[in-house]
Image (cartoon, rainbow, N blue to C red; front, side, top):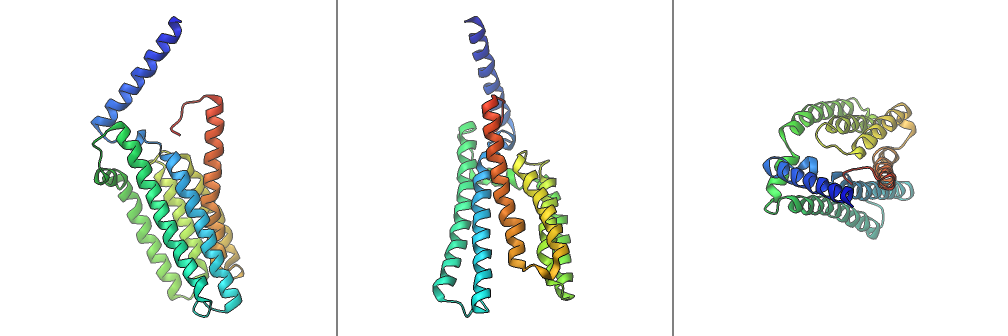
Length: 229
């Protein structure tokens, strides 16, 4: 009985310390980012797979996007808008709800400032500049088929770098997937359609990150290990 009371006190003390630290500074490290981003990854991965796969079929059967049926073009546009809105809504609402459980006066502006922090900007800017330069170079040289794998590899490197800013396992999984599949698509070159390359790299990569994160969270919960799920 005494041991149970001591354990409860320790848990309450840890909660108090966690809340106090969060209120005194940034709270990103205390938010269940992994849990929120898993859903965003799933939505993004499924949407990209459906969108790129749909575009590939349209080109395959109708020769071009403009010659495809109006209902098919409308469906793809609606899918893109719905996926963008759903992914953004889940991410913002999920993180805001978690943040306000720690600090009730937390605002969206404060969340954006913490997400797009100086550390994140220092990581993103050189990658974005390098990526834009390489894409322009490949386009000018007529090597468009190498644009998708190049972007995938750069995104993978960015995600692995961002693990120092946002501590959740899906970043590493999706980053490693993008690098590995990006290299495969790079060597395939013209033998693989760019739209199918997007499905293989980004589409399946985000779904794989969701699956990994979900399975890992369940194993962790079953073993009773502490986590930020």
